[in-house]
Amino acid sequence: MQEKVFLNDKLVDVERAHVSVRDSGLLYGAGLFETMRSHNGVVFRLEDHLDRLLSSATALSIHHAYDREFLRQAVNKVLAANGLADARLRLTLTNGPIAETVEQASPTLLVTATSLQGYPSEYYQTGVMVVLCPYRQNTTEPICGHKTTNYYPRLLALTLARQKGAAESLWFTTDNRLAEGCISNVFLLKTSVLYTPPLQTPVLAGIARKAVCRIAKTESIEVVEKDLHVADVLEADEIFLTNVVMEVLPVIGVERHTVGDGKVGPVTMRLREKYLQTIEEECRRKR
Image (tube, rainbow, N blue to C red):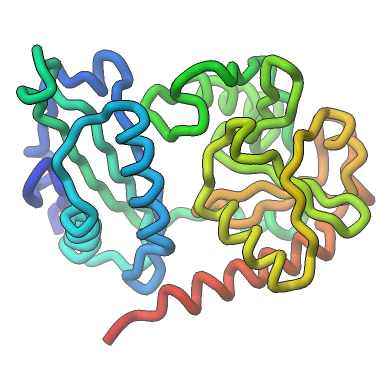
């Protein structure tokens, strides 16, 4: 079956999908994207993804006329057209070809979907290593806290991490506060309290991050959002990362430092199990 994508206003074959060479997303990174996952043909927390996209579009002047229902239908049409149940989806929205005025703007909307390829199962059984990012997150940059198509610094840091045998790289701000991973949010457990950097750091308002915070509270685990530093990372009993594809990923090493006893922690395992249950409950196929 020919792969289908949704481009601007309709489904098209992937080979016939073309974007203007003058697109501002291509030329300047003037765009946003959402990485989503579906289960049983239902996109997990789709409304949260749309909330984040539309909020960032307003904040960063990504001009468009798409309403929530149109975007929702575009996502579901791509899933259905490709016959996918468990999928990784991406919704990209740019300011489109460079225009003289806002009135002349013609945004580019692209939705794609492929079979979901999760992380290796051994990552969850034995945990992963992370490194400290050599770069710094400048909190005064307007794109901080938004998921923009200006993503190359994150990919570069992730490549450097993987060259060292690590799964992620932890970013710190220019004033040395813990921020996030290249593609994930980070949580630390210390003496039964779960800590994570506040959104105002700023960090990306992760969809999985939000879900885990709610799950932890229902499990009577105290969640504290506060400024954290490298000492907090090194003193943590457990560390894990989140995004909608990696779910809840345990960390057992930070560079040469061993986290806890070097094994996947019980709270991390518990939250991962509850997170997977949440996906199952929320993504039951509607009949």
